[in-house]
Image 1 (tube, helix red, strand yellow):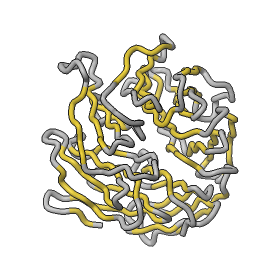
Image 2: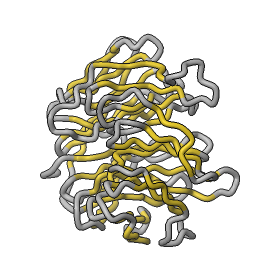
Image 3: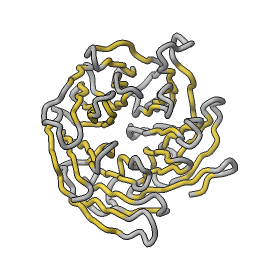
Length: 323
C-alpha cells in the first residue's frame, strides 16, 4: 500500500495494464481485472493480464521527488513519467530499466501527454511545468535530450493535451484560460475561456471534437474544439457535481470509450467519481471510492479511480455502477 496520495493512473493502449504513480515516488502497473491494487514504495509492479495474474516484475523508482503524471507509449513498451524533481523519465517496462532521464524544466512538471506526429511515425511528448512553459520532446528510442519546441505561456501550467491530429496543443494555465498553440506556427492561435479558476486537467474526446476541463471552481466545462464551432464561446456544456475541495488537487477527468464519448467522469474531493451524460449534462452516477479521489480514466465500460494508496476499478451498465 502506498503511504502517499496516488496522483495519476493510466491504462496502456491495449487496455491490458494499468500504471499508477504516487507522491512517495512509486509507480505501480497492474492488470485491469483486479478489483483493488496496493502499491509498494519506490517500485513498479507488473502483473499478467489473465489468471493467475502473476506478478512478474518489480521496478525501482527513477525520480527523486513525487511522480505527478505518466503516460504509456503509443507504439513501444515505454512508460513516460514526470516529477516534481523537474525531470522526464523513459522506462522500458520489459527490462525495467530507465532508458532516458531528461532535466526537462526549471520548475515542477505537472502534466504530460503524447501523440503520433502526422505521417512521420514519430511519437511526440508534451510536458507542462510551473516554470510557465510547455516543452515538446521526441519519444521512443531515437529521441534526443533536447526539446523540439518550447511554448512560453507566461504563468504556471497545470495541464496539457494534444489535438487529435497532433498539430495543436491545448494548455491549461493559472490565468484560468486554455491556450491553443499551433505546433507548426509555434504560436498561440486562440484561447478557450469560461473558467473562473484554474483548469486542473484536459482530456480530448474520442472523436477529437470536444475538450473536457475540470477546474478549481468545481465547474467542469466541455469545450467545442472543432475547426468551425457553432458557438462563439466554444462552450458545449458546463457540468456540476464534482467539487474541487480546498486541497487544490489537480483533479483529472476522462471520456468513455465504448460509446464514442457519450459520458465523461471526474474525480472529486467529496470522495466520489461523478459521471455525466454529455448530451444532457445529467449526472448518471456518483461512485464512492472512499478516501479522497482526484483521478479517473475510462476503458470501454470500466473506469479506474485512484484514491489514497489504492486503485479502484468500476464497471458501468445502463442501470448502475459496480465497484
